[in-house]
Amino acid sequence: MHPNRPTTSTRNRVARGAILAAAMLAAISLPFGVIARTGPLGPPASEPAPQVKPAIDGVLNLFKQRQVVALGDFHGVAQEEAFYSALVRDPRFAEQVGNVVVEFGGSAAQDIIDRYVNGEDVPFTELRHVWTDVVGWLPGPFALGSINFYANVRAVNMKLPVAHRIKVWLGDPKIDWTKINSFHDLQPILAHRDDNIFSIISDEIRKKQKKTLLIIGTGHLVAPDLGPGGPRPISLSIRITDAYPNALAVVTPFTGYIEPECNAKVVARAKDWPVPAVVRPIEGTWLKSELLLPGCNYIPPEQIEQMKKPGGVGFGMKWLGPGKPPDMISFQINMRSGVKSDAILYLGPQDTLTESPMEPSIYLDPDYFKEMNRRAQCCVPTSYTLNWDNIVQQDSVVLRKFQPR
Image 1 (spheres, rainbow, N blue to C red):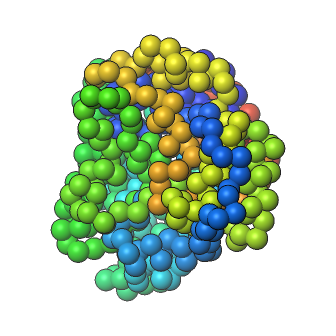
Image 2 (cartoon, rainbow, N blue to C red; image 1 turned 90 degrees about the vertical axis):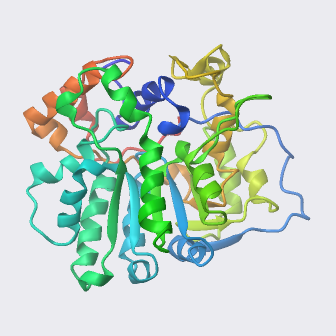
């Protein structure tokens, strides 16, 4: 990894990619994309149309059928992060659901977020532990939209009786960063990221006959292809479904192809859709064909070539185990296209999507920057140095267009 990364989004993805390459595939989300498989040249006229709902209505309708609805997070897309806040602000959410499990918070700070979302005054330097005492988000900075989500939950709860308030569950395992000085120190905790989230959903939600929204990177929700004769693939979604059949629905954001002409085809089909929208089902409708348009790519061909190399996982990384490397191309097709999901979250035309700005204390607080820089140098497989000047430049007040990578 190089310290002069062009955008916050790219840098965060590369850092998380390095962690994935050295840990269990299901233990970390990795928002790569891949070349779509060749399919029919367009949706046959006989294929039925999917149902299209305004996104909030679509998610709440899923809760009428399932107890856990997972929103696959494509880290750093501002429109998706804004939707999370809009969803919890809808009065029906607190009444009908009432729980949210998030990947972007560390369970060591559960008491802090409990106090904050219930209206207590929490100093910012203490509140920041919620999103910095985490395992899989190394080393920051952190997207502002995910942090604003907590403030929106607090705003909603302040208007509700205590018994009817939204509960936020922080999904990342407990970690004490004062004791982490190498990637070797981090690995045992990293391997249990999905375990921790599964335990919350099992013990605090399903066993108590409750419902929850789950916000988590798309990579946690897709099972890798381990090839003929390989072990049965395990993902968080499979674990939930095995333990609680018919309890889970997965919604994946569609962030677009690389080629503008491919995105134009999707936009033409979606011209009358509300934005955002939840669109389902995928299987058995023409939506599946739109997600796998022939000749349309989700990442550049050079990344595909890296994935084809023995042990390659993309971004120049190598698979370090355990076991045989998965079929990363198939994995990325399923993850980025959303074709294996229950529904698609349509956020609008790809060229309207923007990257979320970063939480600015990474460059405003010298002690905080120093600690994040220490983590970058000590605790990822390929260490690097944070470039303070580049981070300041990246956090422009002018919105940056999102680029699928």
